[in-house]
Amino acid sequence: MNTIEADTVILSESSATGGVSLSGTQPNLVRAWRVEVHGIVKTYGQDLTIVAKELAFLGGAIDGSGIDAPKTYRAGDKASPGQPGAQGGDGTNAGSIALYAAEITGPILIKAQGGAGGRGQDGGDGEPATDVGPPGPRIRGESPPCSPPAGGQGPQGGQPGYAGPSGKSGFGGSLNIWLLASSKPAAPSMSHYC
Image 1 (cartoon, rainbow, N blue to C red):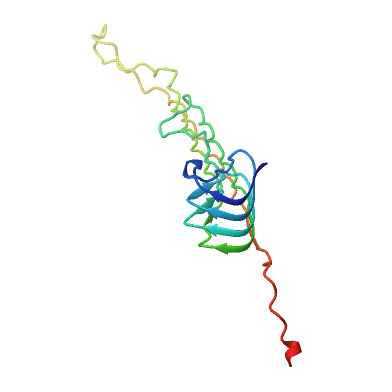
Image 2: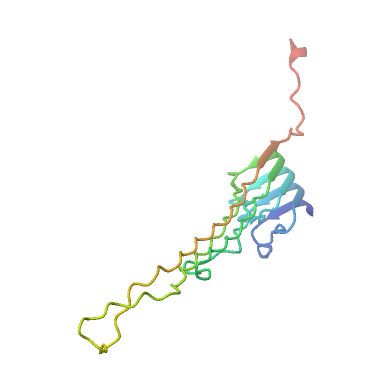
């Protein structure tokens, strides 16, 4: 698990902007007094848990979406003649996002959809016919014929292959937000002033 702990954590799409980037290869845990979300922070389908007193979305969003299938075929990528096309790759599942905070500010923007499945391969063209047709009719009176007779219709070629199925898309992630009780002192009771 990728654990990030500090008084203030700034999550951003790139560490080049002074923020912290999340791991796209393992679950992420962020624990801080204050967490700020700037830009689009991607988890690449990994789980994210944030535990903070203050969680501020400052023009930022969390994208826990899965990764689109790496194996996809372009239109025109065909299988061998008469063969079905190969299946496209599967997209990955979105990560689960859990937010625990006493105070959340700013518009909360969170996306957690599964990665798209890949396009299947086109089926192969039909197999060519293997036989030739019967000889054509002779013209009466020709002996020997001046030219060979035209052949008859040959047999039908093979059936084309079926297109490969598309890959499966990943499942969407879950989102849980818990607002924790504030640690502010309770207002004094007025009952003893009666």
